[in-house]
Image 1 (cartoon, rainbow, N blue to C red):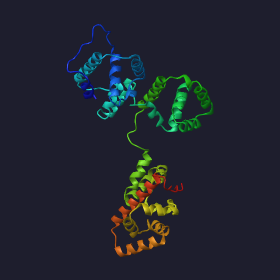
Image 2 (cartoon, helix red, strand yellow; image 1 turned 90 degrees about the vertical axis):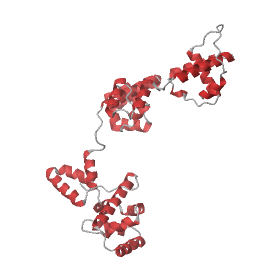
Image 3 (cartoon, rainbow, N blue to C red; image 1 turned 60 degrees about the vertical axis):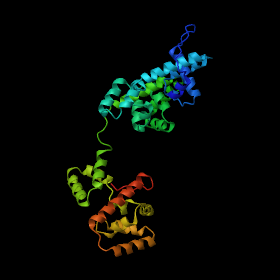
Length: 350
């Protein structure tokens, strides 16, 4: 686009006529923007501050006509400034922090954001809206009714309804009354409130690990060999029976299929995995896994069950490690189906 503007300017550089009043920088900016739009440029003017957008619009509306010499002088000045720029640093403090995201240590970046008051890039309400209803309800109780009213007004309706359902009735009534006065709140105030709430979240030390500790123990034991898993659960039960019971609830192994998968869901499972895996998994049946092997074969089509039995017989002896690996992959496929909402595991009896 600068090349297009450059081609518009004459070879020489005419100076502004002394008989004409000097143009302000805003007027020059309006001229450049008007010319670039005429040349077909796609400008993201919505990234400018709202006040600047309005000023630019007013300036463009106020300028009626300009002579060719003035137009070329404005273009020349603009081109000279562009050529003198070594680099562009967008967006002030917020743009600079966005630029540093990923380049600075995460804790240092959080500290800089807290010190500047710009704790999140972009819209702070995206962060606030990502919180679970329980956390938002706690925020709504900690803040004034007016702040909570702005927060609930800004959040999606379904999420706000869940938050109100968690709050005590009296507090919910206070916030509902305060919401009636949010009609006159300006956008800058709403954004400031969003940054203030996001700043509170930034002050909370982020957890070092994802998920609850019990869940992590269960996931590790899920992937462990049966002998290792059983030995650790036995030892853990001697130390803390309640913790062991909670961990067992998070464990799902091949041996649990018969007790925790609905018979109608077995066809979904068999469709999600390769038949070769089924053969390897079902080929080795012992006291631990026998019930699940029989359960799977009994709840698929009898034609497919017959084919699997024939393939198992033809294959002959299967290494226990190969069968165990296949069983682990079947368990992983069931977990994937559960997370996708395709099936629901039956809760274990306490």
